[in-house]
Length: 112
Length: 113
Image (cartoon, rainbow over all chains, first blue to last red; front, side, top):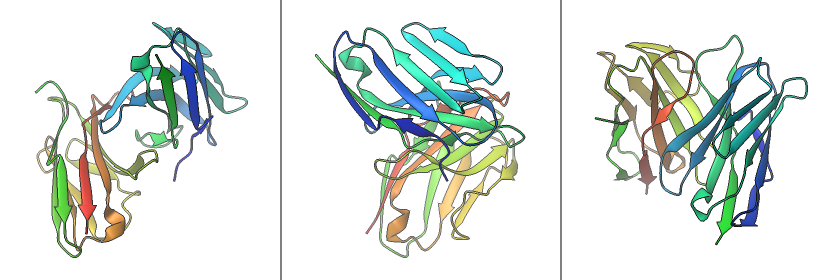
């Protein structure tokens, strides 16, 4: 079963614009992670935010976490054509095993 | 090697055949995960090892699916009597075992005809 639900499911923007993706989840978590997947490739880890954190930055990425609303958002600033990919949020359930539960993903297209 | 290696990259099987998919994790990584990803969907958890111990196999869809990691490094996912609904990309991931990020391989794309 998939816990995370990304929103929107697809987004098309112009190079230089910002892209915001939202993720909602259902259970209490230890951490929430965002991954990127280029077509036909494996997933690449982008950023991890722990349940006691509210915001985190990494380069052009900014992630926020609201545990009261069970939601997270990923902001990519100054997007590039190379950011075109599918993006997934994944959660590690509190009290569970180390496994991550992934959402269905969001397809981002950045037009040059 | 530098990353997680999976083989074969592509596998075509006739319905009813058995298949074996291999995963070489990053050296020294304690935890190893198998995921199944259908086209256009997110990865679905199958099973998880910590060293050679299979700690969670709650995601294996049926008893036709079997995974092992006998020496705590290389892992094999075996699917017996394959069916068309088994067609998917099978992803392997490893981690140092500190509840952090996962490192994924490129996956094995299985097509069952």
